Length: 294
Ligand SMILES: [Fe+2]
Image 1 (cartoon, rainbow, N blue to C red):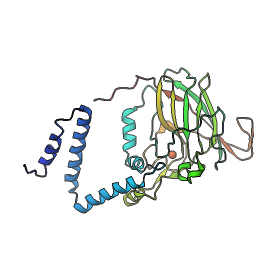
Image 2 (image 1 turned 180 degrees about the vertical axis):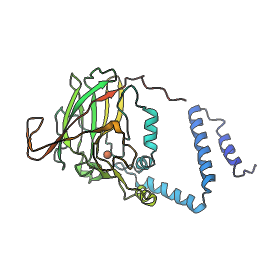
Image 3 (image 1 turned 180 degrees about the horizontal axis):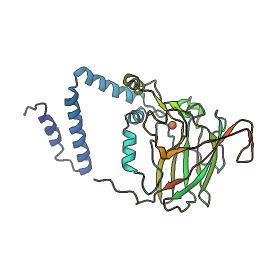
């Protein structure tokens, strides 16, 4: 038996990791325990506050379903997601910057021919996306894959709709032999992250707004080039300077050019105003990323 005081407890808990046979796990847990204890000491956490925190995390877990990931939202709104991403995917050699995956990625979107309208039947202003996928050395990458998703023109994602809605505004598009991609979707608008759960309560308590600037998501990869999870942000969108999940990066802001009703880039007549945007994604080849310190 041994008694611990408010500082020796930290060393005692870390000491129990002595037999851990996974050095990386040992390092991570040692740092986690050290900072967690220091946090409790620094704020002099009260018992009611500690129980509130446990109830909050319990609620976050209970709010998760197969289509809603409240823990990702918590990580996003606390800036942890973008911190992990930025550490692991530094933007160097001119490669496209990464940003948050967010809570609405749905694996297995259909692979569609170039030029497809991903947002068939979805409300929103028609927008024609095009560009190239290149290596950081400017070589064009054929057969690169863009796994694309967005909300509708009002920022509502299919995963927030009734189950029978199925996938909307999602699709996978490959580049042609010259590394080019093009597809049609909608003009993304700003929208609030879900606020009807515990993370929403946390944001209100913090005095924060829940909005993200208009953006479309994509994971871009190519043979020999690891996937990059990123967005294109709409230049001029509201909340570019105060993204609720801190995912905004200036290099990902694209100009969406407005056009009067007329013939769209695909030769089809568009009866409403529409937009075009052109953006090239540059990828870093496998093995080129700087190693993270063990
Ligand atoms: Fe989003």
